[in-house]
Image (cartoon, rainbow, N blue to C red; front, side):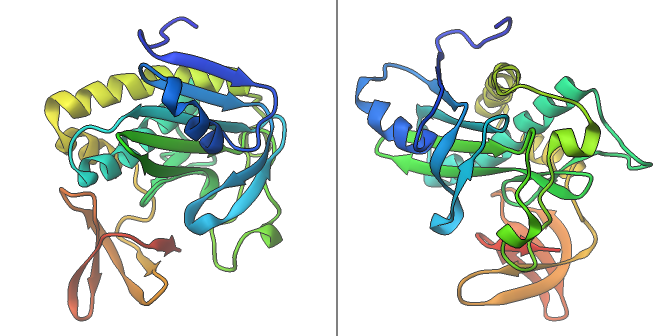
Length: 250
């Protein structure tokens, strides 16, 4: 565990219902930040209550940390987490580009990581009292079938399937924890600007037409920017539209 962040607990379980649920159970006893890893997850949950299981070989982890600052500060930790995850995956695979692409691992607003254009990882943030809980799932060895995801969603892929490289959940946990600690310190000391710039440098489909969909409406426009608050900025025939929360479709 060379490079493991000092003062951060590390909990690895063979099987859990959900690392997010385990985080809630552990909260009353924690005295500092903690990472939870499950080698198998039987009742995970994602955005809008979507549920799935995590087979062995994939990565299912949750970080518990003190919630510092405003709710907007908490939300911007998704950018810290996705950047850290991308950095860890690049470091473990040695891949920056495949089949002519400049960037094998790219970032999809607000909180997904893509590999060769397919979804390889997702991130979910929740606040529980004075704590921020960040759930992270990565398709290391297995990916869901296309018919197991909603229509129009990015096709899921796995690290092993796309690259032939085997990465263990434990190795990813150690690399991710170190990357997150470094980027979190940067966020605390320098603010969102450098995190935003780094995130945009790896953003998927910037300059392309995308669709942002909420439960109430759909906006189609050119992905122009992510603003200083972390909002998605689309250029539409009616002008620039700022979107605070949505699912994005390509």
